[in-house]
Length: 81
Image (cartoon, rainbow, N blue to C red):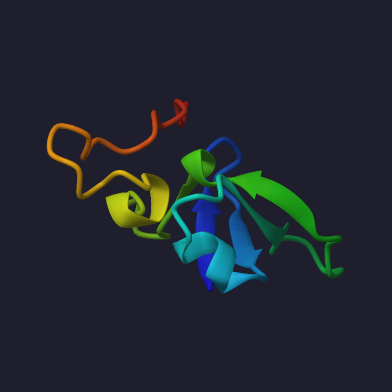
């Protein structure tokens, strides 16, 4: 799956989708999908990732307490500017 890295605006290929869906994990392994050569894998904060359309990731992927009343806000998103 490809997501957009907010600070760089580059696409990131997520290598471990299970990490992306688990709200208890705050980082995912992936690699930038830019340039001609295959990039080395690195850790990316979920707070910096968005769908290529610019849409935020679902709250249930970011916050383990998303079903608790009053706690449905996502993890504080980092500024994308």
